[in-house]
Length: 156
View 1 (cartoon, rainbow, N blue to C red):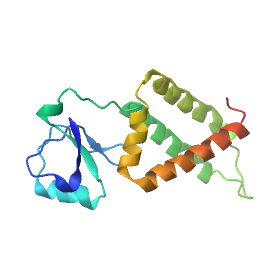
View 2 (view 1 turned 180 degrees about the vertical axis):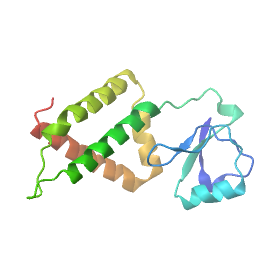
View 3 (view 1 turned 180 degrees about the horizontal axis):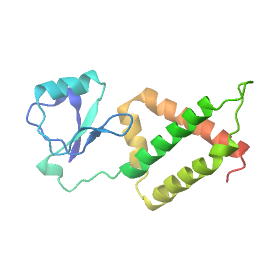
View 4 (view 1 turned 90 degrees about the vertical axis):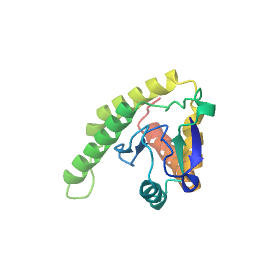
């Protein structure tokens, strides 16, 4: 399996890994033979790279930093919490984050447990950087905000 530039793909190329949307839903499945229409759609969705099957690199299997199941669970939980907070805001526009703290803490612990078991964390940074420099910078900024919130909540 190897990473290939989406614009350089040709019809008949087989995907090496599933392609997901931003919410973790599968757009295209692993082992699918791509058509020109699919390639054009990937390009229009600004997906610059995909993993493809290649007999020369069959022994290379990229590992995600956290499981798809945990990623979907975290996204769903966070969205549910934020929606709940938005709907339950006090008249003065404030809300209590303490109500969500238990759920957030559990999500973070689950993610940290998986990250600690993954010896190849650099793949996460590589995939983000390869995907888009803006996303990489945005991810870095989100990390800074997250650390600041964690420090404010006295989370070690």
